[in-house]
Length: 346
Picture 1 (cartoon, one colour):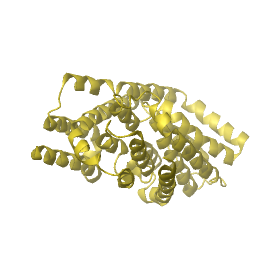
Picture 2 (cartoon, helix red, strand yellow):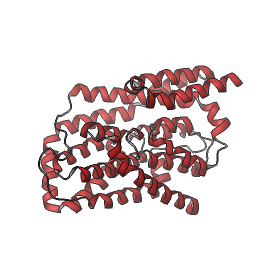
Picture 3 (cartoon, one colour):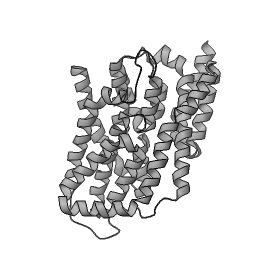
Picture 4 (cartoon, helix red, strand yellow):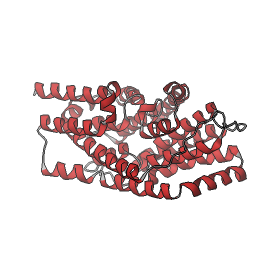
């Protein structure tokens, strides 16, 4: 059995390090994770017809949501820009920015984190505020999306994997399981981000001094993205199953408070991958709450931490240093507050 644990630790190390250290792996992340997940299942001896069916079934709902909302978003892009510009004029910039940050966060649980990110890109592209203000708006919005998308299994891969892992006894996780488990923490976090966003209004600056992204997505890009999401989630299903012996042997014995702070590595590593490696149905609901909130909050700190960060930073040309200047203190502060709430109120 020792060689099994050794091999699984090598696989886990490769999953955690190589996407961050090797650009080619980062570019082909879905294929890499499929390979690592298949290796982990093989090493653990857990291949079964049921597992293959599970890996093919779990990504369906979120992939369809990404595809459908992506097509709808492309078709309504021009109307959306006009509507947002009109809303900004009618409401005033502070109220408008508050509404944007709050709504994209709350709606992302239904429309997916990717669509929420694309809406943020459209909003910011039309604002023409000073670059520093727009960077802060994007970071606050991505924190909001990262939190809100975790409330349902169609919001983002992390929530899809969490529900998949906890679907059986004793949790019997249903569609709104995470909303029930995390909602009392997530919703205040979203509104806190919205309050910060409302303070970023400023005088309009000339073109070229703010963030912008003008090119609409091609249909093939939308379809390809949905396929990549399917492959990504399927890979995480395999990986989470293959790493079960490691989780049961080592992670289950880790105090929940320690696991919460260990998960600050989610700032540089995709939080869905970490969720796949850490969650076990043998954990209590309180343990799962600690684990997921640590992942969600740390995931907003740096660009690689979650999908919204990557989408918005890539499309708007936000640099890593710009993001960290806003994201690290915000994430650290939210983690401290959340930890205190979890410790004292459970």
